[in-house]
Image (cartoon, rainbow, N blue to C red):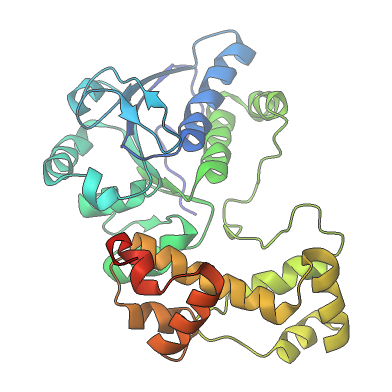
Length: 325
């Protein structure tokens, strides 16, 4: 990972950060960016960080949880900040208007660094701010993001710093990124105190995959490993015998591990992962149903439709178009 001089370097100067929050962003992602800076100031007993929240329309932004987040103004209110962080979530193609993209493209050179969280990298890419850079995005969007922007080196890392650009896949990754920023600017001791304050165990390695496949409370780590393998092979499902061989166990033992940990067999769990993948694509993309089927490991639209209706009580077409229900 290429580290940036500039904001990611030791300094006692206060870092001024403008945070552009788009409608339908997650409150957890906003908090993951803002609260580490607030807590760092508290731990250090000085103003190491300053921040301001701006929005596309210069008004309060409605987040996915229904809370409205106040802002100090539109993008112009970010003038003078050292860094700009863009936080976006659902429907970025709609909420990041052409005017906003044009404004970002024009204003980006005025900041020492520009970053994005979750769908924020999509907004940056549309503005041409990631050309020739290494970047990541939320794991649900990695494949489409890489296909849409061939001039960006897309990786599945938790967060990426590429010269004067930085990207994070989601809330947890954003917290890791902010702790890294605090650590390099103010010392690893300060970052440790911030993490301890939140009872948070940071991921020291930014290149760790975003989806470790962990199941909270799972007694057998082989369950997590098996789910990881399944998650990496949704488009071309692999045989359960191969998964068992990968774990060094027999098929019967694999079956028991899944029933003990999830209350269902591995075949049912694998199907659930593929159906949930299809459900996300139907909700968040405009891919034809056939493409959704193929990218979820189903042979055709009919096979997907049968499995989808059994699981969710409606067809893929009805899931995408509520009027058709």
